[in-house]
Image (cartoon, rainbow, N blue to C red; front, side, top):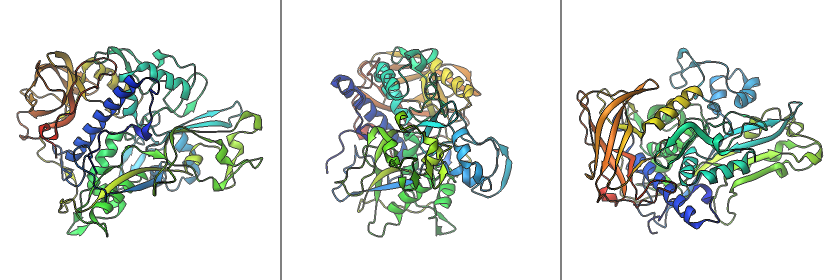
Length: 551
């Protein structure tokens, strides 16, 4: 089987059906972003953590052939937020309400150790932070408090940031279709911030039409995911980390809970992270049919809703409840493809007004639907992984991931400084975890200098004497100052690109006095493009041999 030519958009969605030029720009931009996440996942965090990378059994299908013998397998998990029941087993009467409205109780238990901890607010924080199974929803009620519609989404935020870079007008059009015709472009913009990369106002992912779990005529909706763990980049890192075999005291670590605690690739208690991690780990390391296994996420990569199980639903007039479930974006499984999964991105559940009853008049297992999470409890999320054997990769089990006692410096983020500060302020105002807003690769053009760029070090501060270099040699980074942002100190840098710089991705190497020396450059933060503006990511990829630091 030849190399994959391009990563497809989630569920192969095409948001510019009448504009081939913009669709081509979107496809190229999305492919570039996914390629960077895969390359970063191949490496893992080798600066701050021990035994968290590299991951030789994970692979990039753009640079390594997928043989015809490869198989794709679905990995499902419940869409209901599992940590609610795991952390509060004695509050089952409140689980559905909390899944809709947030968890009011503090967390006092470390699920990995079982130890009691000092009370902390239930994480993740944010307008829908607790909905952390890669599925979020928003609820519309009538004047009597009965549910009239539930809007479910599993669209990753990175896709919408990419779409905004290509065409803010198309993002607006989709919001108007998905949420309300009343959405205005200014509603979607970060107030007072212009992104110099595109020349357009910066996108606000936590705008009033995509924040929280309550929908009204003037605000609310669930267009894409907002909880900080719910990103595709994080999922790639999880899947890649899960390919590493683990052992404790010479015994293999195999259980879902033990793996997620040992490998630190997610949160115990969730349905998603432990299930995905254990499944990938078993397919790669304990496969009864295959040896020397490699794995990757199946194209088109994504985390998708599955059709609900309506067997326990009962409607007042006997209408099948499945009639009220509408797939708005995405598609159902291909019945001619064995083992295929639904790739639903956006769905609604609502009863036509002419029937004279509401969602809350429907029962599930004999109980009226008072909370949208009762519906979420009847369907799964799923992804697909592709695996093949006889790859030539042989792994030795490693012990659990721990923080390095002698960490080395690495660049964590690179973004226009005003934009970076504005997003950090947004996160604080919305009570989101730090750096929950995705940051795409920073674009530069040949023969240009970009000034006032924020560079975040993995330490969160800006020690004197730091040096940042681009190993590929045709881009220079110079420190011009520092700035305090939301409890962190970032470097302000200028980035100068040579006139003859080849289009494609670059790596960044950090050297900081007093920290361990490293020759491992950070991947996926910087890219050279032909021009800026909407549809900017029209770059070609560098050959794999040029991408230094890749595992």
